[in-house]
Image (tube, rainbow, N blue to C red; front, side, top):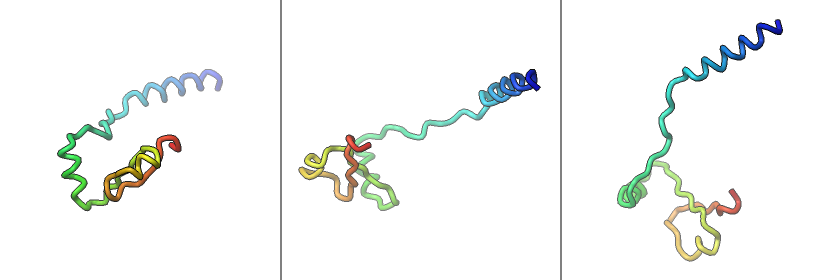
Length: 71
C-alpha cells in the first residue's frame, strides 16, 4: 500500500497536466466598444471600484459602488 500511494499520486498529477487548455475569460475592449455595450440592456453589471467621494463626484449611471478598499 505504501508503494501504491506514490504511484497513484504521480499518475493523478500527470493526468491533470493533460486537461484541455483553458481560454482566457476576459479580453480588453476599446472605450467605444464599452460605450456601445453599455447601451445594450443585456443583464450586464457595471462595478465602480473607486472611493465613495470619487463615486459621488460622478459615475456611470447604474454603476454599483464596491470600493477597492473593501475588496
